[in-house]
Amino acid sequence: MTDIILIRHGETLWNRERRMQGHTDTVLSATGRAQAVALGERLAGAAFAALYSSDLARAWDTAHAIAQRTGHDIIAEPNLRERRFGIFEGLTYAEMTERHPDEWRHFQSRDPDYVIPGGECARDFYARCLACLTAIAERHAGEVAVVTHGLVLDALYRAAHGMALDSPRPVPLLNASLNGFGYERRVWRMSFWGDVAHLEAAAVTRFEGRSV
Image (tube, rainbow, N blue to C red; front, top):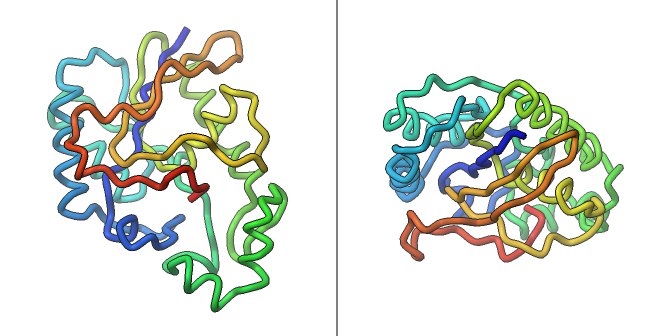
């Protein structure tokens, strides 16, 4: 059995402004950098076998703060990137609704096969995430830390709960949170979700169960 600590990157300014990030390479805010340091302190004594990260800066810099305390080399994994949102990237919800009303309406329908112009559909994104995380789990025994993005957490939550891609997620995605999953015999199980005990409440960005 492999245990994966799935970690969402620290807060970015676009998180705070509720702008769609996707593959856009945003950086951590001052709060996000403080969250990453707190993660490093929390995990300083953890004995995990490897530290993986998305290659986008907001995840990589979060992983770097952890690596500074644990001594791990960071293994870059591009397939841990956030879902690609194409024409929506860089826009707030209000701007997406105003500039791309038809595309936004289709996106809001939660059709897992809808491809955002310039982006990717939820089904392809889910397959990418699961293939990547399963490969990591099958490569290691024991515990592995993986720093990634909100909807990658969402994908593994769905896999562990047998949850349809078009169903609303009942739990929030928290910046700099620890989320525990176990993998054994090609089955994923969740052990804990949204652990932010290392953060002060005011430093946590909450998305209140929204898909992005």
